[in-house]
Image 1: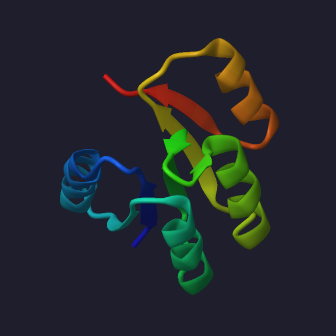
Image 2: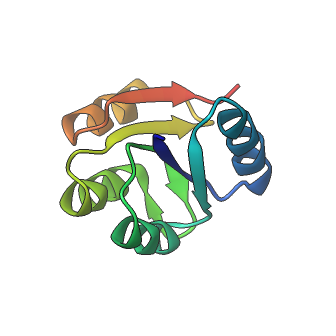
Length: 103
């Protein structure tokens, strides 16, 4: 079973996405800040990380860098409520696989 880590400080988003992905057969874990996510990444291997760009204790670029050090094979999708081409390009330069704007 493929595993996904959702990192977002919005608990409603985490619940919504987690429930949807669980129903599709994925194993899902959630973290509400960067440090909590890093702890999860050190304990378990994930196939995909969905990471909010703006977290209370860090940002998406820093998280990409930290995730790549711990789990270089994990795919990373940055999710954000703020559409910004410059930020999207920056995340791709640091190794994000995709950049998605929240509806």
